[in-house]
Amino acid sequence: MKRCLVCACCFEGENWGCPRCGNQPALRDGLIRFAEDPSIARGGFKPEYFAQLARFEEGNFWFRARNRLIQWALRNYFPDAENFFEIGCGTGFVFKGVREILPRLRLAGSEIFGDGLVFAQARLPGADLYQMDARQIPFEREFDVIGAFDVLEHIVEDENVLTQMFRATRPDGGILVTVPQHHFLWSASDEHSMHQRRYSRAELRRKVERAGFRVERITSFISLLLPFMIFSRMKRKSSRDFDLWEEFEISRPLNAVLESILTIERALIKAGVSFPAGGSLLLIAKRPATAQ
Image (cartoon, rainbow, N blue to C red; front, top):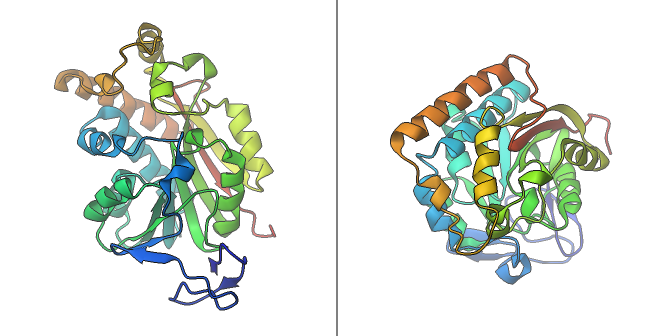
């Protein structure tokens, strides 16, 4: 169902006009815009980063490995899903990967910054895309699966976002979440990425369960590369003259080796291994069928 962000009325239908209060979100450049003022997101991300992300995502080992892990989790834990909603879809790189493996899945995505949606529109013609603040999701019990991939760490009110995700998820549906892990890995990279936090496993589980979800699986990933990551972050602890994109500019042979290592790691995760430590966390959770 659609949910009016002004009066909280829930309603069905193609039209976004609220039958109770008459509120109608703006439509511009083919996008429904629930949050046209990006200043509300100031401090969470820099929109000029999208062009650089679009440049690196297709070839970089980290983005490619995360995509394949997300694809596996979606197929394995939600085999009957008919639709998928991604919060903070950015340039649409994850979206594109989901469409490649599940072409019949109805896709919807949101991004607070219109700059990112320009790239997402180009990558995913036909997907439902919204300019939206994740703290105010205009849906109720609408989606089989909602994804938030390296999004929550950018938002001060992360628990509010999880509550909104719970509201928008159908009973027996669920969420897929990835976040950066381990406070001791905090570095200039986090500061320039405008992160609010890195998570511990206990913190992420607690916040997700507090929102009403039942956690099905939680595992670290980027685990086999953790020593490499620690060394890299120790070298780049200072923010002075920091280049966020330098770590993405690696040689093709090294990129291939790192991706191969993460392929082995993913095989272990598929086999049931839950790594206790790693650069990131993957969490899969479901909304109980009886949840109100």
